[in-house]
Each structure stands twice: as C-alpha cells, then as structure tokens.
Length: 494
Image (cartoon, rainbow, N blue to C red; front, side, top):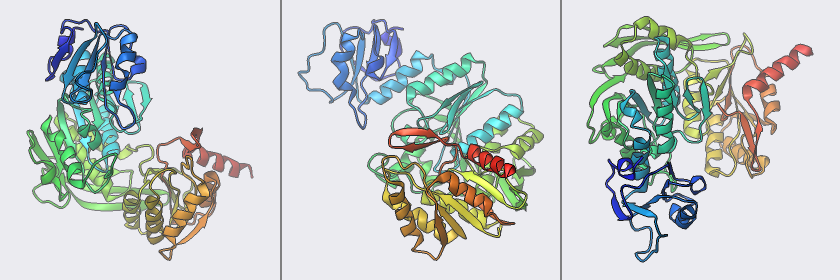
C-alpha cells in the first residue's frame, strides 16, 4: 500500500521523502520492523519509539511516523527514510491501521461497551443472544478475543489499535456478521479505537476507579474519556439510573436510548425483580417493559446482573431478535469468572468471581446478602507488587460483610505471600469478622468446601477467569475449576 493511502485520513505532514513510498507492513514494535516497514514511533510508559529510528532504518524500514516535538530540531534522519510527522502518533497508528486493514468497521457492525463494571459480562450476554438468533459474532474483551473457533488470550481490556483493526479484519474474513467489544477508558484516552465508527456504543455505569499516575489524572478525566465513545457511534445506549450519565454524554453526537430500573421514562425498564435462591443455586427474575414486554430469568445472581441483561436486551433489539431467543439465551448465559456458579453440593452454593479490589468485593458481597444466606464465606488474597492499601481495604470489606473469611494467596509476584496476608489481616482486624489464614490456595478452597454448611454461599474471589498463579516472574497453572474438580475427585476416593 502507498504511504499516501495509509495516511489518507490523518492530519500528517511530510518532513522528508515521498508520499509515494510503497509500504509492506505497519509496525509499532521495532523488533518487528523489516524491509519496507512503516514504523510508528509511540511514546510509551517504559519506552520511546523515537530511540529506535536508526535501528529500524538499518532493518530496511521505508518510512517512520514521528510525534511533533519528540526529537531535537537538528536530528539527522537516516538517508532514504521517508519521515512523516503528527501531533499524536497513537492517533496516527489507529488511522494507519484502519487503512491497512481496509476499514473493517465500515464493513460489519461493531458494538462497543464502556463503563466501570459490567463490560465483560454484557459482551458475552450480547454474543449469546445474537448467536442464539443465528448471527455469527466476534468478541474483543478483557478475557479474550474470539474469532470463530479461535480464542486469543487478552493482555488488555481493549488491545492496541493495530490489533483491534486486525481482529476485525479477521472476523470479516472468517464470515462473521458483527463484533462486540469492551472499550476501556484507557483505550479511548490512548486512541486505540480512533477512526472506528461504532454502530452502537453502550455506557453501563461509572464509579471512581483507574485513577492514578499511570491511568487517569482525575475522576473528571475518567468521565470525559468514557464520553468519547459517544462521539464515534451511531446509537448510544445508556444506563439512565447512573447519576453521572448526563456528564458522560456531554458533547455526544449520536442518537440516545436508555434503560434502567428506577427511572420511569427509560426506554427499557426492569420491574418486579425477584431473587431466586434454591439449594446450590442463585438467580434472578424480572419483568421487562417499555419497548419490549416479557419476563426474563437469569442463572446468575444480583441486581447488577439485571442491569447487564437490560443492556444486552437494549442492544439486541436493534437486530430484530425474537423475544423467545432473548429469553432462552439469557437464561443460560454465564461468563467465566464473573459470579460463575460451580456445582459442588446441593446444600450450599459455590461461585468464582474476579472481584479483586474493595469496590468490586463490596458490590458482590452486598448483592449476595440480598439472598439471606445462612453464611457468606469468602476466600481471597491480593496481588503482590500492587498498592498495599488495596489489601487493607479488601480485608476490611470482607471482615465487615462476610460471616467468615479465608485469607489465602493470589498472585504474590515478587512479594512474600505471608506479608501480603499480614496486610489483609490488618484490614480484617478493623472489624469483628471471623477469619483463618491458609496460604496454599488449593488448601484454602478445600477447607471452604469441606466446611460448607447448608444455606451457605462460598465465594472464591480475585482470580476469576485467570488460570495461573504468578510467582517470582513465572506463571504456574492454577485454574480454580480444575482445583475444585481435583478436591471433589479426591473426596470420592476417600
């Protein structure tokens, strides 16, 4: 592809060379540069792509994109290297990637979901409903990217812009009908979805999170970044109950539709909400009214699950899905590691959830109290080389809201697991909650299962979809579903 074609939608300036240069690949990792490459210099948290210009030139790169002000004015570029300049090279990468893959988002509908909580579950619910109705749907999210039968583990909630465009192109080539993806505020801030026109953009909710030196400078910036999605979609579907919805929608350019529980004028509304509690089972039931009218049953617990279902229904209504197809798909929809119930006993309920900070854990435990269980037993640890405050906070939440806590190990990384558990214990001691320490996670899970009592709800929190434990730079296999099966199999032999 000609360089001019690649940059046709970018506000870029030619510094030297020719727009007529033939480009053989678009790269932003210098190690992948080769003959005919267009190397885009990204200024990252740990590395600056501008320091690799000479290296990629030696490898045969045809052109580079530099960020204005990132190099000295008298910088001497290698001979025969075409140089293009932009204010923001991350935006340049997104626009060049879209051109390179022939603008795939203009060839299939793309549904983007942003919000603090609910993104992952909602994307899977939408995928389940649409596929139940006969559509073939790709997914890009926190856990994985799914392209037909191919599953690719995710490194970020929303991958770099080049990968987003590549995945969308692969979905088209695989014959898929549409794509649903999680869109993080960080991705919107860093232009990972720039140049991509969404058919539908969704806002689930917002609460203070991801605020810090490496993410968002303030809650106000966090709100503003979430709102960027509604300047690049055709239809915006939003949670009318969230008090910050109006702020998120400031400057929107799309048609807006609403859903909710509390607001009477929402386009889709849930009412008559019931908490279904049977031995070994927690679920929800509600009546849908507004643009659609029917009863919905969910095999996942909690009021937040009703919101997730409302979101999915509001999206899928745009694709002429029959009521019964929506009902059937939602009844069995479950997401790995998100209030995922694992059958172990007909006396008590055991679930796996990704809750790995105080806010998520408090939301989960508060929800479970609505079922009036005999006891809530929470098994959790905290990741090493992360803020110690998270440990105190999670300990305090579990001590306050659980009837019994089993402190164990999570991903200790390069820290001493016992020291992490000490910090969690400090938090629990601020409450009158009962607890025990069992550092080996498998032993902790076995203890929780063997001590389970009729009417209990047991939560394995923090790992969720993860199938490893990270210790001193290595990831060791650890899938809690496998661990549970091994414990149950061992019990049968005894």
